[in-house]
Length: 357
Image (cartoon, rainbow, N blue to C red; front, side, top):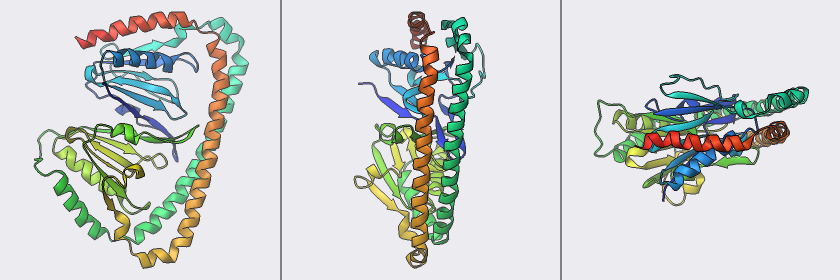
């Protein structure tokens, strides 16, 4: 059976909408279809239908989900033939880097009734502004949550024995890459999100990303205990050995890391708690000065509650943005010729099939 992996290429974060869209497909892509069009014009459905067609033909797929509506996708990738379809509509600011040679723009506006769209101009602009304002409000809550989480990180960092963690990390890397020599060819690094704050709450696809991992290691530890530093050392060691790595970032602070998957040796390392009891675990809290931690534990717990509350408020606003976005879609859905979209889908399938030969 073919495998479908799920990711988020962008996220609703403490820095606003944060994009790792440049990593959806590699620089060696055969074809990238950049799909432009308004909400409700069938972009996600078109990509899902293309994906379903190639899945049924035995191809593995990647579905890259929209963080503002995780039931919709912003991209589908067919890794074996190096073809991707990507939603290139705002806020996904993706430009055609090699127009014609690799990149091709698909304009869903070719299938709508422009005259009828213009009749709803005022309503569309009004709802668009409401959507934008709702997202802005949500992002301010996430920014506040990020600031308070950084308080926790700073405090916990001051309690840690990072010298001992470095020794443990050295041992971990030696065991992990035993028999793997350094290479003059650097491995590829790919940055995405495995989880996101969505209208349905916190959604996590780590299990999907690690579905074909042979070995999985669990890393646990409170914020500020050095997990991201550990992940960076591991994935850079992998790259130096010519191994390709997927790096999945945390949704609140998008520079932090929650999971890495070393594809060539099928090893996953994650902070996801679903893997905690089933796999080898390294707990960085063991290297914390517990006496110092106990002095500040009440303040830290209070800050944790505040972070959770602010994230909940942010999700409420993301959910409201989705409801408004659904209103916006109605103006487009009723004015799209979906029969023509379906005809175009068949043409597109035949185009993509050329890359299977």
